[in-house]
Length: 193
Length: 115
Image (cartoon, rainbow over all chains, first blue to last red; front, side, top):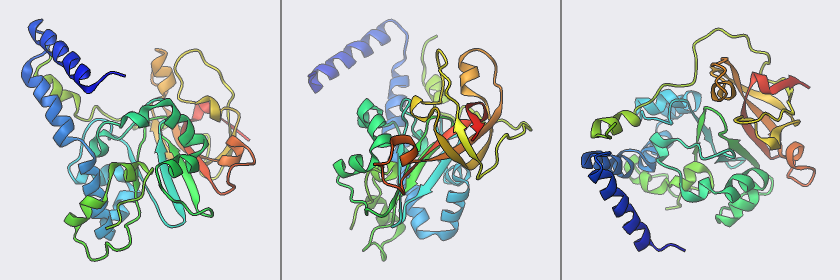
């Protein structure tokens, strides 16, 4: 195993080499870090979901044309050109995978987590979704329908998780904390308050 | 080329969809039963092996998109309909899979034949 310290050292060595050879400017590196830490990420997706939970008209637009509804909220970025949002209900649980590689909606969820790109997740989310969900600690009723979405082509998928019981009185802003990245991939439910 | 802040800013902007605004006839309609072709191309394809030869039904017609396979092989965009196709878990994985479970995958016209 490589320790975090080893990785940090290697990254620093690569960074100084790229800078010394004049291949990259320091502000470009700052821009990349700011982009993926602050501007692209599941904090955007959470705002989309919290609004869908509290605004029925927005939810209808989101399910009918996710691309336009997400752009309407200002999240317009690469890997978000053609979006589909699928809704979890007590009867239907949706789970997203890219069996061929690592396709993921960057604008709303950021870069994919390491496990999402791993061969075991890519194989088993398709062949044994209930087993994968159980390993994530996600209970699904035996008689509910599990739908797996393989984002193998040009569309990018995001799950609209069920609004958890006990969140009825919460404001849109407070709901944000209940929407996790994993719940928008479909491997987890939203957090119960 | 030196990578500057401006270069990075250009990278995350929407690069343009693979969707094309071309009038191409769809070979299938929503509800049609199809079979994924059992093709084994050398090189890039978005038709995974686990779907080849399986029967499913057209759930949604997503519209016309550039064809990833022909693009990868330098054979042009070959725009065609891209469908969301539903396969039952039992069709793909056999009788032990839960009867109500399913998998949706996006497949271009060229991957499909009537079943």
